[in-house]
Length: 536
Ligand code: NA7
Image 1 (cartoon, rainbow, N blue to C red):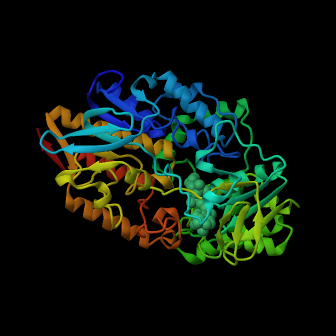
Image 2 (cartoon, helix red, strand yellow; image 1 turned 30 degrees about the vertical axis):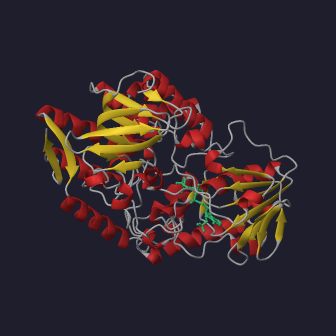
């Protein structure tokens, strides 16, 4: 380690976002030595980088909080039902300070490679700042949505105005006043930032390739009484969240969407609509498996949106045509559809007039030239595996993870990969992370890994490695679950479908958070069934 001179650790943690921060705390409290590397200048991961205006979490603040410390739960006061990016970042900075985590993090340092020593079962980790350290365990907490995607638009570098990416937003903000702005992309990042950009800009053009389903956040400030009530019931709220499909305390209606009366169905959807955001996709248990059930939710959504958007032709363009509602993550917005009633906003349909490229002064589509001062790329991420690909992870026989996963990621429980002993990739492919509450999921993974290390240490064992059979079975299990779901048919980042050249494989585990938690807990309790325990 270039600063301390220490070169040997129990664990190297890559990334100091939600999972990485807790990993440092948990491993340390178990007496392990930890070195964390973080490419950014501060903690927070996704909440450090994504500073675009309007950035907000789509899980309620009270649930999108660490559960490992009851004191922390009681001390921290969220100001809104759905927290903004600055507030979540402030929370994560508070956690880093409160648990004195920064002393084990090297900031502004990107891990460039991790190479396995097969004999000694150690990982040699190198960084772009010249560090070379060795660790028994490699824990990657680089985040499933961290590698920003900039599509290869022809002539993008010729554009003489400003270009900003939502996932690399400048720290001192962006002033849109008096500007002609083009936003490309209508996922969460586009849909959350567009209403705010529209208020400031002289003219806003939204370049939409696929329409998305978005639902108002229904955000409200939290008053003292609500907070007190939430905190008094925190333990129960956590219990329900841990058992649930998505890591929050809400449950779907017990019956199928097609079993209930029209009146009851509407009442259930109305209630979910008021709750706001992403949970609308789970109002009924069969909504994401049965197209007819899904259709009832879609019809309800469509009615709501058509009532907001003045121009029926624009409302039609804003209505998704190619995926079931919830098959891509439903966006949680604040005033998105209303934005299209403004005189200074124009929706450009890239399906009928695709982008040809950029020139010095703007964006050229097959239909027109759009004169712009600024282009905002809200074009998402090379998700789930993109950040791992940038790390050169070399396992047994000199084989890289990238080669091993060329046809799609292969894991056992998301936690074990044959050929890569003592390597744990947190919240990645093979786990339900991106479909669940990322904070509770990160804790689940970190606790599982910490317990596995304790298990090895108690036996004097040197390592743990998913067996090829267990990996093959889990890949099959994940595939079967995906094939039974409507999520498998959308062109989403869950399948890498947004990145040219990626194999089309549904990457998350679709059985739900509670079920996944039971499975991995049972595996640990059974003495790590499906893993080989390696002797020193
Ligand atoms: P998303 O959801 O992947 O959205 C990216 C958007 O950018 C989406 O509308 C894409 O259209 C569009 N896009 C991507 N490439 C292009 C090109 N080449 N041309 C035109 N449009 C393009 O990313 P976000 O950052 O919004 O959100 C990611 C997750 O973060 C979100 O799901 C939440 O979980 C939080 P497409 O749909 O591919 O046609």
